[in-house]
Image (tube, helix red, strand yellow):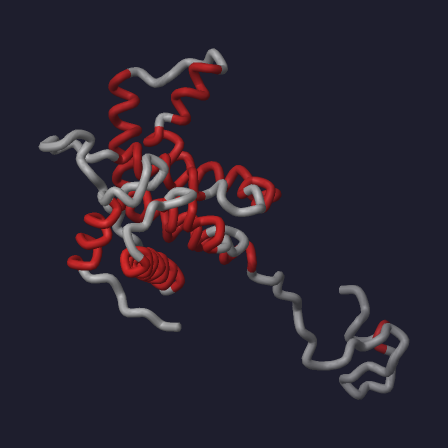
Length: 230
């Protein structure tokens, strides 16, 4: 069933509903929900709503009424449909970003990146297993998210590696933030390209055997005529 795209008012309403008493701490904020759904829409294999709905809304919301439940689910499914449709059409999805703190001008890229990475773990198939021989290409695509979420720094320090200097980190973070708007589309394209069957060469004419008459009409065998080594 085709649904209408979300408007700015719809997003405001969803944000308002997510702040209601129906949800516990497990539910995601709107920016995190968008990030998870970007990963779900790009996944190498379809992820069931039975999996991603509890991931974004929590396991057991205390719905105030059936009408509230229906309204929230309608908005969430429409958000998913908007994201999936945009990615399928080759369009970028502009990340919804909240301030790090109220009244702060600094945007929370880390929360969005961390939520996207969480979304990559919702399907039954591990992304890196699915990438196969293209595992390094996938890692390169995800690296800005690893950097913005703090995962890369934590792993580097845990393994005793040298982390970036403050100046190097600032440059790397700035570059990752610039790349973020195009990452959902790039990751979606990565999986769609891998899913395409390998094209094989099609012969429009039957193959000529080496001992068959040469198709040029000379009367000689193909191996002694046009098929002879040069």
